[in-house]
Figure 1: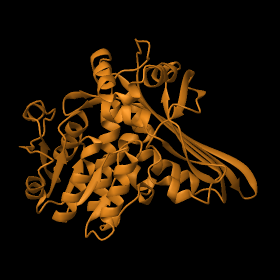
Figure 2 (figure 1 turned 90 degrees about the vertical axis):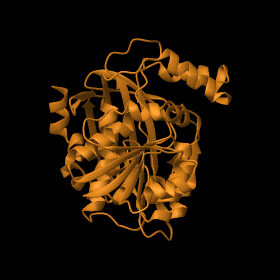
Figure 3 (figure 1 turned 120 degrees about the horizontal axis):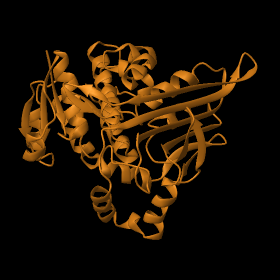
Figure 4 (figure 1 turned 180 degrees about the vertical axis):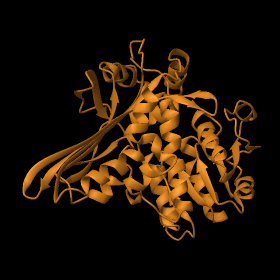
Length: 366
């Protein structure tokens, strides 16, 4: 049985711990600075709970000593400290961050590491990049790769058409930070909340707009190989305009703590959500202009006798699948590992990755 540490005892950390401890192959320790978070941990499988200040490097080093892996479900600003401790301990490192600067720091730490460093293992970045790269490899010449993900309430009931489904800090970060893209064959930065478009899926109208971090390392991987590459967050129509008013007109972009307080006290959480994954790739194959699309809806479901949201399930399933593939020797075990290094077929065949498989998603929706 492999010993792993999950840092962060929130909704996503709880789901990761439940999946890993429940499968019987991992001995799970959940670490958090908050005793209250550990007390409220939503797990039925047996886990060890440790209160630790992530800023205390010595305590973190002791916690990770001898462990097979550490999985970070902590806020993005703690990413580098956890990755640094993983390197010291020789433990494999996995995280869920969408923060571009943090991922660059993790990549630098991985250069001479004796263990694997696999950032951005969630939904977006994460699975969306695995699916997009799989489609991209089916073309002789790539033209456009368009990616989008949304975690949305099934029953929107406020002006933003949104409920809080994951980290508020992460949400604000992706709405405020510059976005990576390839436009006309040139890597560049684009602005968040811009390049809005509308599309319909299963008869429902959505909007999509630029947000930061969702591309993971695909800009680097496909640089010089694709004409246009973009990632956009999917919401119900009207959301982007209201968020731009809050961030730009009311200048809450400069007062993120205030915006976080407003959102967390005005928007309720919900377990009745749906995750939408959308990838469209076009280019030449056999001399013909072709297009392939991957589209999926995934719904919440009970796990461990408790209702779980779709964003909990998909995010936790992503990082748990990558951990399994590492343990099985299907991924490099040292240095920096990209999401594109994960084979889509291996991911979907995995016991955790099956949560993304079309038949499983349909079953969950029933």
